[in-house]
Image 1 (cartoon, rainbow, N blue to C red):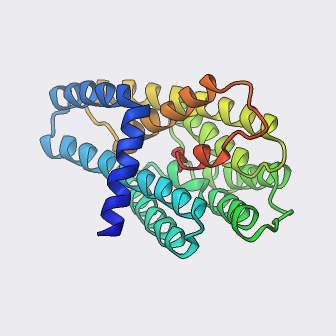
Image 2 (cartoon, helix red, strand yellow):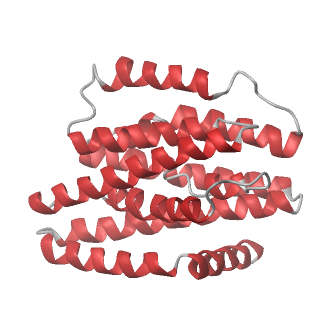
Length: 248
């Protein structure tokens, strides 16, 4: 019951701040149902985007729990969100052969551990920073994605760039200006690449659910950043992490 109450509370908070995103989502889903030849595939898109939204709400619940020192509860919410995110990415990889959504997860996990240590345990994982994570990103891209031919189109490469850059942004600590600059560039690439991917997919009548999620949810974070630019010293970095879709 407590989980349900917290979930509804975060949905209401998100809806008040981002009511416009639901209008865009309804319009896009209407277009997808009209264009997509396979009705089951359209239902799958709706199912994936809905689950992705649920996982994002669990991330918001996690930070709300941490803010009131309910650390164990926050950890449960984090585990639940990570399991949902990972399941959706594996499903998309297996069904649509789009593994680039999954590729940056090691960096997201390290960034999450770093932020947990800083915010909750008041310590730091100094080896996790934007320099080391940039090197790790290049290793994954040129050691796994390129040799495995796992990123097919230009739009997917733009998406992938945004996904990795956002993960790197989350590893920045102590320099909110740098963190915000990384995040804005990453979100523009993520949103732009996803919009490009959706447009391409509409022409071939096959839309991946995660492409829609990686367009809409990061768009809400991008709008947040633009509204709060330049960042202040007390800028809430947890708001950025709560939308990692950017997760995602």
